[in-house]
Length: 311
Image 1: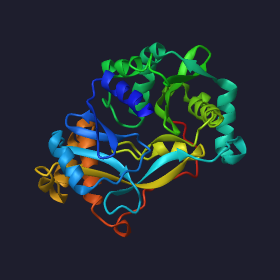
Image 2: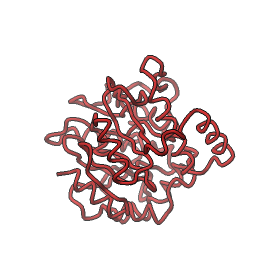
Image 3: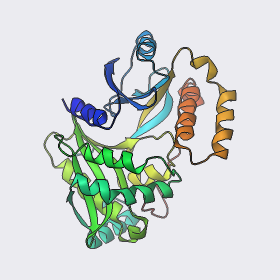
Image 4: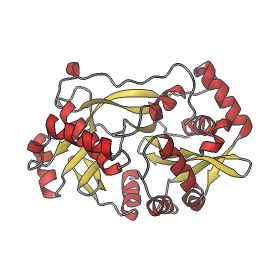
């Protein structure tokens, strides 16, 4: 099963992987777990969730659940489900940028070794543009890329300007979907529109492969700016409405409230480049807002019109 291969990739990177509550889970950070496959919408029984948290010593866990579930932050998955994909389906600005990218970039598979080495600069530039300095270190990035090298299904693709790697992404087939993971790009080559070209060519290619039902371009992030997903939606992807739920260990849950969240946000403001604090703030926000009804929650704001971004 593809999920088991994906789980092996996570294990090679040093993450603990378990199977419980009708899904797989990996330890994203110390005692912080994320469910996968990412596009699965699960609805675990409450007692089973609490037992999982206790049994595996989890502080918190996050998963996606249907929009009609009783708990969870109003959220989305960035996906493409239509059977066809072409330039005419995109806006005028996006078509212009895709054409520029196709004229200046060469889209092709690359080795995971190249992704591990040359891709590090792309990661640094991308995280800097997003204001997420330090979200990943070089050793972790190199291990992430090299761990996929000989696993079935994993592919690395790049957009090249001349011989320079301008953008890159990891591709993986998960059950009936394809995942686009860790897309990144060099700031000094953005004028060649490598992200637009890479996304367009890969989306077109993946849809032509047998058995493709959808392409997942990512989840509503805990800490990334909305501009990350705005680019995806301008490229024709859609925000599939879901709820993302964060649950906390019974011993920790009473400590998670609006006061503690406000305090953590204040600390995060003093230390804005701490990925740990950013993720913790996101989990607390998902937990607190996720207890509200859908009517009490705002719809995630995504701006897709206007000037075309390339990052």
